[in-house]
Length: 58
Image (tube, rainbow, N blue to C red; front, side):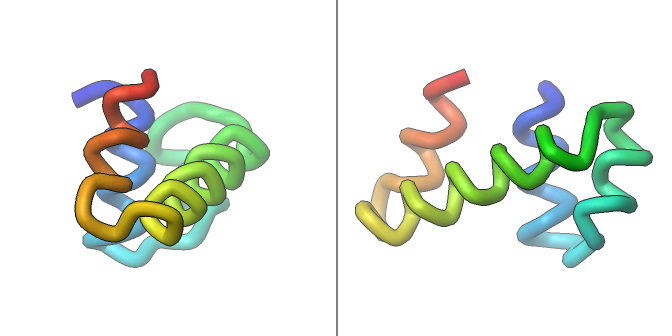
C-alpha cells in the first residue's frame, strides 16, 4: 500500500486525525490535508468512481 492509500485508509476507515496520520505515515500534515481534500472533492464530484479516480491519479 502506498502512502496515499495509507492516508486515505487512516482517514476513512480508522478516523484518525490529520496529525496522527502524518506521524504514522511519515509525511507533513499539509500533505495529509492535500490528499484528503483532493479525495473529498473527487468523491463529491463523482460519488460512484471518485475514490478510484483519486487513487489512480498517484
